[in-house]
Amino acid sequence: MGNDELWLRRRGELYPFGYNIGNLACQCESNEEKTLMDVAKIREKLNKTLLMMALILGALLMLFPFFWMLFVAVKAEGHGFKLDFVFAQPLFKNFTAVWTNESFPFSRFFINSLFVATSGSLMTALFCSMGAYVFAKKNFIFKETLFWMLLSTLMIPGMMYMVPQFAIVTKLGWINTYRGMIIPHVANIFGLFLLRQHMETIPDALISSAEIDGASEWQIFKNIIVPLSMPVITTVFLLSFLFQWTNFLWQLVVNTPDSLKLTLPVGLALFRGQYATQWTLLMAASAFSIIPIAVLFLALQRFFIEGLTAGAVKE
Picture 1: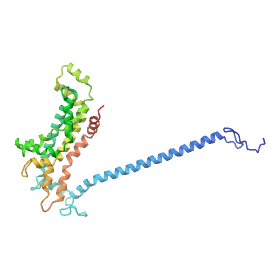
Picture 2: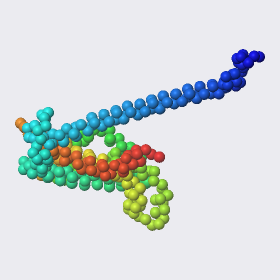
Picture 3: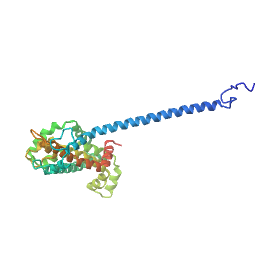
């Protein structure tokens, strides 16, 4: 075999030029794998970028009404919905005017809403946690049947039982009273469900140990059940507060127009005039109305998320 003859042999032997066929094939395969990995990384980055752009667009669409509300709130009177930049002088004049407007007792509406929402939510959290403890850790006849009967009421629209509720409130003499505004909505079946699902995951050994040590039912509930269920209790409190704070129809039904106990949603609706509406003042008042919800959610956001995940899934 001559020196100038190509030494073509089986894979793995040398060419006269010094190349190894096996190494060359492996190098080609590694280059191909590297190219595929680069394409996959580029595709992953592109998908993440598109997803982020979609999320940002969705966030802007949801925040646009709030930006528009604040934009109108700082406009001059008569320029509320005009596409111009004629602002009030001083800039926050409408925000101060809301609190000093004699024809619109905003401060009274705000305090009424704060009292109704806070007291109602505290009562809801307390009673739901007590009821959930009984359904989760106590045995009595027809326990499951009664629980599922209560849970089935979630399928009934609220409008269906508003008339009988109003009849009961009227017979009790609770029209234009805080009792009529708060008590009919203290029972929260969804909150009972969340708390019961979570409390079933609490080990029975903790309760048995406390009973052996001589703890009463109230001590077990207060010192063991409540601390371990605090994220879910906070979630129930927040959901109830949001409902009570934004509740319009029931507060309108249970109060007369001249009542001193009207809440903020009803007050904002009455602020609209028959022939004209001061939109700048209305938007400023609406901006104030979202502050308690925003503050509560930001302060208790961690407990809210933990409570939803802990109460919605039974381990």
